[in-house]
Length: 188
Image (cartoon, rainbow, N blue to C red):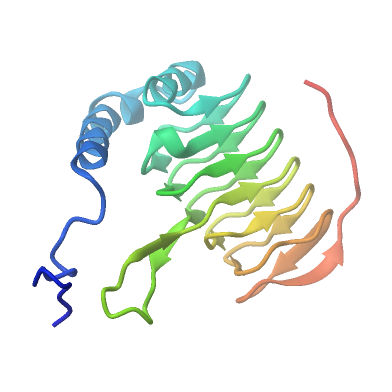
């Protein structure tokens, strides 16, 4: 059994402070009763709810009703971001979605894990950044501390364990570069 110097079992202790747990409880109630029940076209209302819980949400963002955000206060979206239904943003650490980035259905962005080499099994975390024009395809996973550079694509069902280069397409487990992508830009 893993106990600290005061004899407290680290496996049964709360990982986050009470204030964090209460904020997440309140958010889960608002998510269940309001956020996911706002009709699909009303993205501005969902963005407003996220902002009310501390998220930074830019202009023209489309966050769909069944996207799940663990901690809105750790979500930073620039302009024209799309987060599809059933996306899981597990964000004990900051997740940044840059302008014109897209996160497709059932993708999983995970900014925390546990230190399995420590007998106390503490939570460890690192930010995730999805660059401008980057695309996380359906069912893909981005691990903590990973950056998808501008224009990079993480293909269907792939897992990004390391940073992705700009304007490149990655696929597989772990994701490896398979080709280059054409560069382009838009204005809002």
